[in-house]
Each structure stands twice: as C-alpha cells, then as structure tokens.
Image 1 (tube, rainbow, N blue to C red):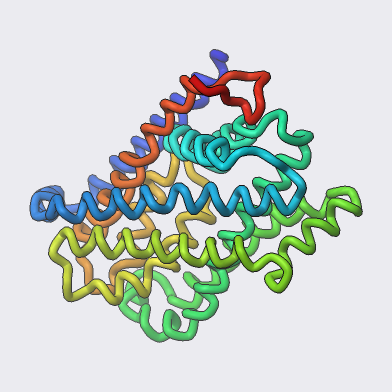
Image 2 (image 1 turned 90 degrees about the horizontal axis):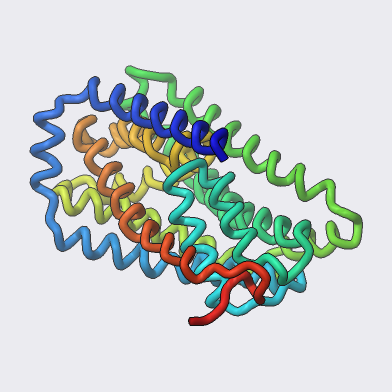
Length: 307
C-alpha cells in the first residue's frame, strides 16, 4: 500500500512539473485574460456533452461484453465506467481505470474474459479514431504548414501514426494470445458486418469529444476558428490518447494542444486555455463517479448491491 501511494505521489509530482514547465513558457497574463473571457454557458454545455457520453461509453462496453457472453445489468456497467473515469483522473487511465472497470463486473465472468471485453471495448474506440485521422490525413498534410517552423509536418504525422499503431498493436497482441475458441469470438466481434453497434457508438463518442473541443474554443470567443478546431481535434485526440501519461491526460494534452492547434490560428495561450477548459470539464463530470465506491460491495452480482 505504501509503495502504491508513493508511486502515485511521484506521478502526481511529475505531472505537476510538466504542467509548470508548460506554463513557464507561456504568457501567463494572456492566459489569464483568455480564461477570464470564458462564457460560463459553454461550461454547462460541455458538462452536458460529457454527461451524455458516459452512458454511451457504458452502452458500448455492455454491447461488447454481451457479445462475449458476459451478463450484468446496464447500471453496473454505467457505475463501473463512471468509477473508472473518476479513478482515471488520479493516475494512468489505462492502468487504474481498467482496474476499476474489471472490479465493477467481478463475478459476472472469469477474469480473462472480463479483461478481453475491456480490451475489445478500448480497441473499438482506438480503431475508429485511427480511421477518422487516416481519412483526414490528406488535408492534414497540406493544412499543417504553420507547424513547419517547429517540426516537419510529415515527420509529425508519421510519428503520431506510428505511436497510434504501436498502441493498437500492444492491445492486439494481448488479444492474439487468447485460446483459439475465444480468439474466434473476438475476431467476429471486430467484424463490422456482424457487430456494427460498438463501432457506431465509437464514432458518435469521438464526435462528442470533438464537440467539446469546439465548445471550449467557442466559450473563449474564438468563433472564427471553430471549424479548424473541429478539423484538428481528431488528430489531437489520437495524439493525446496514444501517448503514455502520468496522471490522466494532464500535461501531454496541453502540450499537444499548443502544438497542434497552431494551424487553427490560435495563439499558444489560447490553445492552452482551450485544453485546460476541456480537461476541467471532464474532471468535473468524472470525479463524482468516486461516489460509486460507497455502493461497491464485493461478493455480490456485478460487485454492487442496492441500498
């Protein structure tokens, strides 16, 4: 327990150091002025979008689990997903978040099958986002020219694609080791003709995340840049989601936003403000999921019992 706490504190300090380094390179007066201009009505819209995304994330997870023969009530999936989002804000989501989701359905199936369901669920979103970015790649190649002063665009796009593919291969490698009968079930689940539902949900969810980037920019009054923010948001989501993090996405998301939102015509301080608002909205919706801990009772169906 002490080792876990010590590791978490180290990650938290490193994440704080990364954020401090990013802030030290920005005009903090300009950043404060940008944040002060934020329209609170857009904050409510961002919270509503995140709030609508949570049930859809849980629904996708349930679709995948049901196709693999895992039962459970929808509310158990929703509680587990919300709890996962909450603890994911306190550490690397792919580690602590998946641990939380696993325990939400403990007792519904053997541990190996539960982990497979979570991997397939994560792969669904990753594949859809990768396809969106690949579809936009021609426009990115010619539209990211403002970045040439910092880094060659082909090298940047190539790096992001390689990182995304490596992340996908790491997930796929774990699925490849499955026993043959289970591997066939997973292969059928990835077939969009047999199981299109989770892919459609992944597409809608990516759209909602893009929408919140746009709402964060709109709330800052950057109305002339909204179309280009929406255009760049999938690339930003892929870069943020594929890179390892210390505590949630803080730090890497802000660095990516400063770099990738330049072609949208945003100053570094404006891009940083957009990222901070986007992250704060997710945090505000996710953290109440920690209340699911009070409902958690080991040894009962789905890991929860009613009160």
